[in-house]
Length: 476
Image (cartoon, rainbow, N blue to C red; front, side):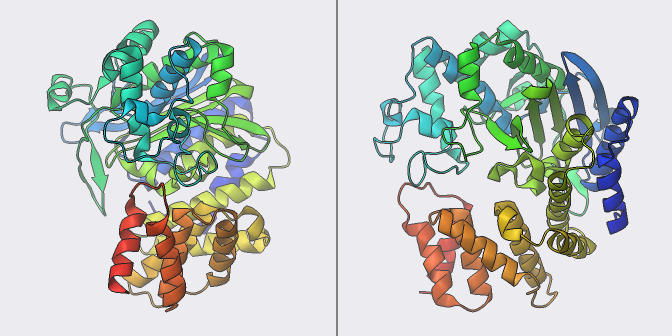
């Protein structure tokens, strides 16, 4: 699909128009989804929107199985990846509520041969605040999987059995199961969404087997709506436990206890996302408006381009379409914040898609120029997503031999230095600054930031660790 800047701006402002009547909202949302599905080359999607306990939008797009021409329908099951964390959060809140577990317990009490310090508590793992200075900063981490033995020892049963007994069973989530091995997926072949990758063309992808507190559940949109109902009516947890789950340990952090908790334009968003190599999912609730969005897809491009790992749902064009059409559609005039977020989300998406289509690189640049001209105070809104976008444009220019790209260097330095001053240990900021100074030939400055990554205490290795170590080995 060829998207021009005019098309993008039409998508933004038509979707934000306060004149849209209630009966037109679903049509506009459906149009948005179809455009995004095509843009991101998603084979199949399942979508549910609920408000005040009533499904107001439900649709199924494309194919669960391209080869056999099997379309997605209400029975199609998708691996939901990190949405599994929400189930884990509920189980830990339930154990806390029943007096079976204290979140202050050192995680090492549940682990064998742990390399973590005894000061790391269950609560730190659950809130993604276990790295760096404990409890201070949010870094989404695969350490969350360490909660598997916490649940198993607390409930005296295997994680899968606990989920089935405490959640699947009571909620009658009969179409939800676990990614143990290919035996189960083959047994449910007719309803299982096949995995796909996109790299200039769509090809079959892998199923990533394995179950833990981090990932491994397979579900349908309808079953996830049952989970949403349980969160709304407090059938699994007390109101106090639910509010605690939905609260971040610090006001400025975007993650609660097993689920994201974010303020946007004065409204609280409760959400989670999932991303495998060949699947993606989004679960978004707006309690104040009694509204819920559930999205499932069988490639990773519903999640990956948006860098949701940084904790901002508004970097997703799918989330923004829901918010524009169902949450903020009555705002008049349209919020400048929402318009800016839409432009930035589209620029971020274009930069990601430029790896497949060169013209998207130019579109990302054009959108960013609109943003910086319209909203010149970029230091006030510059965040990791914008920094990633700006650095990725430089990376693409280098790898595709577009020539040296310096157009936004002042923005990169300003945003990166500001983020670094607030959080000097942030590995993402350090890797971006290392890459930036390396590209400018500032070896000593680059070395400083890469060494910050490898020398920092209480961090588990991640992709940025490999980048830093590789650079330091080549630049002793």
